[in-house]
Structure formats: C-alpha cells, structure tokens
Length: 412
Image 1 (cartoon, rainbow, N blue to C red):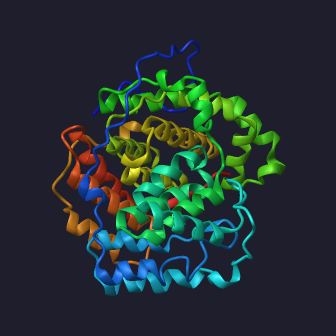
Image 2: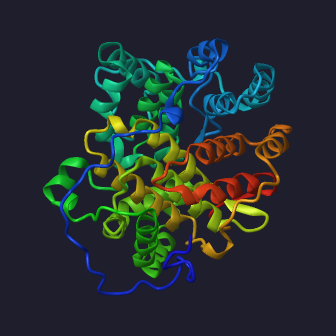
C-alpha cells in the first residue's frame, strides 16, 4: 500500500509549475454497493426515524451551530445490528442536549430562503417533502442536490451527512430534512455548476485509473495549497471568523476560494464512489496520533460515506466529487494543515482482535455518536471492499481500533 507521497508530509512545500493534464471527461461509475445503501432498519426504528427521532421533535441544531446527530447515530447503531434496547439507551442519553422543535418554528415567508441564509428550516423541510411526494426521494435528489453541492461543507457537512444517512435508511422524512439542511447551510467552497461548465473544468480533471493514483492526487492537491497565503488570510480576518470552524470556512469561501479551486483541480476523478470513502478514511488514519484525531477530518469520512449512498443519482458525478474534495481541502486549511503521517498506516490485517471484540468494546459505552458512525463505516467497508480496491481492509480495521482512545482536536 505504499504510495509516492508516503515518505513526506502533506505539509511539504508545494512545487511550482505543476502541469494540469487535460483529458477526456468520464463519469464516476453509476454502480454502488447495494449493501452500503440498502435499508437495514427494523420497523420500530424506521417508524421512529420518521417521527420522534426526526426534527419533528427536536430542532436540527442546538446551542447555536451544533448539529443534531440523533438520527445518524440511530442509523449507524441499527446497521451495526445493535438491539433496539441499546439504541433506546443512546437516544435517551443524546436527546437531553437537544432543543424542542417548537422553539424554532417560524412563520412561512412568500418565497423560499436563498441558499445559506440559515433561516426558515421548517419551511424548507415542508418544501422538500412536497418535492419527494411528487418525484420520490431519488427524483428529488437528482433535481436538487447538484444545485447545492458547491456549498455542502456548511454546518460542518451535516446537511450532506443527514441526507446520506436518511437515504441509506429509506427514510423519506430524513431525506427532506437533509436537503433542507443543505439549502439552509450552504457555504460555497467551489464554483456553482453553471460556472464550472462554462470554465471547461470537467475536461481538465484527470480520471484516476487506480486507487493509489487517486489517493496520491489528493496529496498533490494539498501540497499545492499556498499555505502561507491562506494562513495570512485567516489571521487578517480573525474578527470575521472568531476562531469557529463554521466562520473559518466562511472566511476561506469569501477571501480565498480561488486558491481552493486551483488545488481542487488536481484531484483525480475516481471511477468508484467507494474510493472516496476509502481515501478519506486513509487520510483520517494518517492524521491521527496515538491519542487524538482531527474532529473535522473525521467528518470527511462520514460525509464521504453519506455521499456514496446517493452519488448514483447525481447527474454530473464528476462535479459532485469536485465540490466534495474542495470542501475537504477547505477543512484541511482551517484545521491548521494537520501533519499527515502515512507511515503509521498498517499494511497487514491481523486476525486479533476480531470484529466482535472491537465492536463490543466501542458499543459498551455511551460514546460521542461520531465514534459509532466511524465504527459502522469501517465495519461495512471492511466487509464490502470490492476487487477494485482490495488492499484497504487493514486501514478499515485500524480506523475502528483508533476509536476507543481518541480525543478530538479542533482548530485553534
């Protein structure tokens, strides 16, 4: 599993004069792993996801910008085969910090809010529910996601995550909520689709022929980022972002979007949606230390998995991938250019501990729900890796084994 950039950090200086290859466009594969996206929810869980565990009961955010992860945690636990009693235990512990929906309902306005205005969430949910009634979930995603993809990093990717988990569970209400939260939270980290087409970038993005080529292209993109310039941008606009992740992303969007776009152009387009998940998991593992991880690069894994659930529905998959990777590059910048130690990634998969032992250790405690989602994704990817990328199993298992000892690192 060695790649050409494993011996150096992502933080190494960018090399001038990188040549952008211009090749013919191809679409991401429309195939998806059926067992990654088929609903596994029991009837009790499915019913609750449409009702008391949706944002009908609790608002999509709490304590300001923090996102409601209740449904994601429930779906992850259910996909792991956890008993309903244990899921109920998680719900009771989690819902204590949530805010009642009744405190956040606003009178509807004559027109829908613009993307990223962060208002009228429930009016947006009603709108997307009606779209789903007419078009179905697949049709609604096909019609609307591409319009919002340029800003999918808003609210720390949670609109995307909510949408993907809801779609994987077959929960129409959650799909509507995910589309609404995306609409509500847009922070542009890419050109919109029409500008992207006009600029001809679709033909300038190379199509990866191997996973290593794809993963290495992410390294090249990060290496090309003008680190000093971007850090100066953040420092100069400290009053604008006040140190929070959300506003740091807004700062990059407002003042340095062109730098992200140029770097994002270097990321190859993968032929399989699963490669996106594996690449982000590999990056996550490489940025962990023995006792901590980057909280928002962890979101890169869960949002990549979420995107993979419905990417087959997006008309221009190459554009959706470009938007997603631009957002990841933005995260890497605002999180302080985390060192990436690819040498800590293991190449072999030991039999011990087995997955039952790993799962039992993690599920025994009421952990932050991000741990449950990472476990669910690592477990599923380990057991569904196709022949297109068979060497990732050790990384999947390593990611799961990191979970019990992790503390989350946030940008300064």
